[in-house]
Image (cartoon, rainbow, N blue to C red; front, side, top):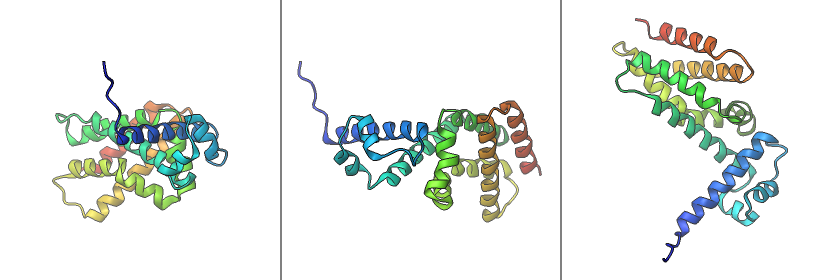
Length: 195
């Protein structure tokens, strides 16, 4: 039986994934400053040339790890959406999905602590805006309808609510009761969408 040869694209994707997986593990365990690119390639079982073929430098690699984590969080939130839920209930369900997604070990560190510190607040915010915050803004817009809200105010509200979600995730990771923060977020959502 002849095995099908993998395409160059498949091999390239597999190499990139191996690098990202190894880098994620090291960034979580050691932190950004204590992770060197030779450590990443050794953990991935690849060469430095393979790493630099895919990533300009360590910071670009870190950014790619953060972006992948942000995409996974957004996907978890979107998958939690049940089209039969009211917009308010969808927001609350999304909050629970966010807390579940952020419970993945290392995710709070990567997205909420090290991400802004290493990439800068603006770049970290742009990554969030392209992923989970976009989902949150869409949910808020649906929940606030039929009231008309200025788009700038809607964006600002999503940013503030996102900050509340992020702070809650940090507290929950630190040992705070998830149920208490879920109740607080639910109350906050209700206060925002009240007519």
